[in-house]
Length: 231
Length: 124
Image 1 (tube, each protein chain N blue to C red):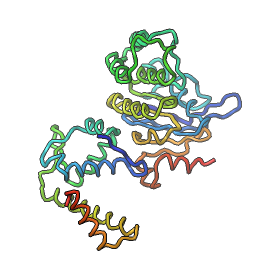
Image 2 (cartoon, one colour):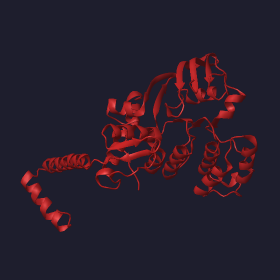
Image 3 (cartoon, one colour):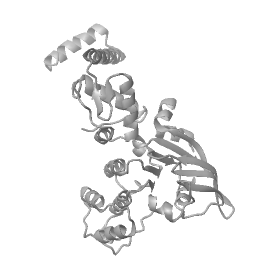
Image 4 (cartoon, each protein chain N blue to C red):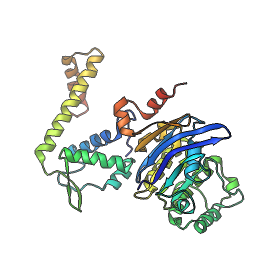
């Protein structure tokens, strides 16, 4: 059974068509890049998979079932914007996650925090935007999930930390789990991708294994993306 | 060690090249057990699936082999390793000559450069 399956998935906001007839499967054990320009429907698709929006028509299936309580247990989701309570300390957030999610691995979180020089007794409000993003990513990657969905995980962090974050993603996701990374910073992440999905104007433009696309076009994914969506 | 990958070429092919070099240079010795797919992927900071694909390719080339349940080993075949090393050496020499030609230096002059500089650096 496929981990995620989208069948003729459509989403309209009022009369505006945001996603049109999305047919997509996400297999187990892959890292997938969901790539598209701003405002092409990436986040809407992710929210549909996470049961934060309901389809106008068509359906999303997670392990064969409609999204809901069960799918939320196995999907670890990094939203575009941080939702952490500013008055909390890092240690309190860790405790919160530990109580909230059965599959939260506290030891892993503590280790990652140490690696990235984040202090347990620091308040969220005292942390820079980049530090908060790192913390959020650590929390998400510290769950033993079947699917990690990372919506723009690199946006606010410096290039040096980006590499560390990619390594964190690579080395911390469960065996057999899949990762969906949505981004427009393609050059930074393309080396870790198994497959790419180009999304444009609410439609799937192409899906392909990353290395296959590179040898077919003799170019980087970043370059191919630029050629496809030249303004 | 940092590995830099060229995003314009399939990553798995670059991994095949890197591991081939580890074998011909003796970093991975003849008959030696190599690290697991996950360990190698972690070492080179790549996706384990991509590493797996590279190892399948190296296994097709007979440079490594799988001992059931026990992991992967470098070939015992010294002749094969020598052959691969020879091919790599020829390729590098061709590249050298070509790049010298591209800046207007003839083959004979290129050889002279090699003798002078190589000798000085004690590489020859």
